[in-house]
Length: 192
Ligand code: ADP
Image 1 (cartoon, rainbow, N blue to C red):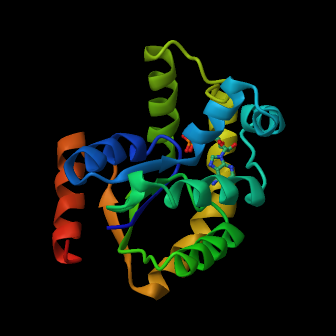
Image 2 (cartoon, rainbow, N blue to C red):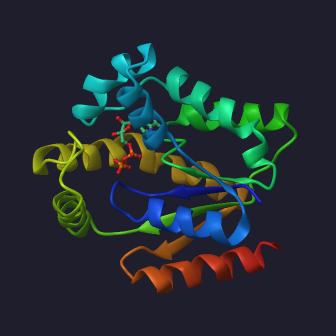
């Protein structure tokens, strides 16, 4: 089973991805986590990405496409994968389609997390405070900017998946258990 969790920063994608990983043995592929790991490790790619991420901008499509392709070929993704934070632009979505075709894989569902913007800003700031605020992009200004970028660059991808007939929506403002249940109901219907 291959899934995309789709939604703005702070929508709860990472939390649900971890639950899906545990329940279904899927690989959790978060491009944000991969990039933060590269920054931490001080790799060339990490050095390129660091300032862009801190500003809340998107790193280049080529970088993230390469990171994802490396991971979907790995044995950890043999049972399937959950994409979290990717694709974020139309070229990324098109590259993903080509990559899946090349590897003989298909997407089963794209799950959109619907959450109001004002709820998101407060959530991300609270999460930053609780976790010690280790992310450079978790200031009020940068979170607001990340949301603007999401609406401009990423939300327009929804019709792309709508047309494929694989787009589903959950209420990301419901509590964690409810969202998990809603996702499971969608997966039950898509034939897992
Ligand atoms: P969030 O969704 O909470 O903003 P992520 O951890 O998914 O955070 O991403 C953090 C940052 O990493 C993004 O703001 C962006 O700079 C970079 N990034 C992650 N995924 C992508 C992507 N698919 N395309 C471009 N940049 C990305």
